[in-house]
Amino acid sequence: MRKSLLSLLVVATVIAAILVAGCTSSTSPTPSPQVVSTNTSSTTATTSSSSAASSVSPSPSASASPTPTATPTATPTASPTPTSSPTATPQPSGKTSIALGIGSGGPPQLVFTKGESINWVVDVTSQVTGTTVCGGTVTVSIAGVSTTQLTSAPGCFHTAYFTLNSGVPKDGTYKVTLSYSGYGTLQPSTSSTSIRVSG
Image (cartoon, rainbow, N blue to C red; front, side, top):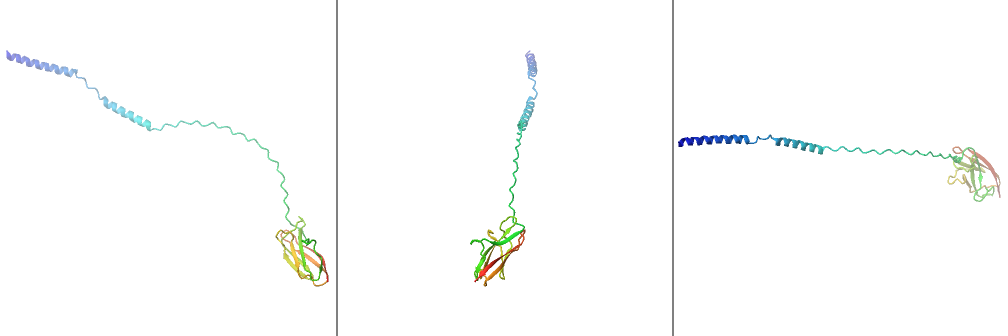
């Protein structure tokens, strides 16, 4: 009798264990799918998207071009009436005239005593401009004595200066010949006068 009770207790224990095991297996929650990995990849994708979005430079906003202003039309100014250019002073040229000039002592001296020095200025004048000119040479011949001189350039107040320190040793009337060589466009010229020498 005791043995059969023990057997029943064992069977009951086994049945109870089976029931408990069945209840445990039926009540245990079904493991949920691995959402974590899905969320992780989604998070990673989101992070990558965010990184990519942050690395992309924002497109510069198109700045509005200023509306071009109309260029003001230039008011035409009246051209000044051209004035006649001043007439250029003609340069000495062409025919010339040569003569004894008026020096510091006045008109040229033409009467001398024997041995008195002779000092003259000689002027060559352009017949075109009426001005005294320089350039070339002047030759003065008197009483068989001929002297040639270059024209005096400084200021050209007179073309040349003639000096005969020993004068003329004899009484008489002597012819004086003046010659100009010409220069550039200036033509040669000659003239003559006479002097009186007395004792």
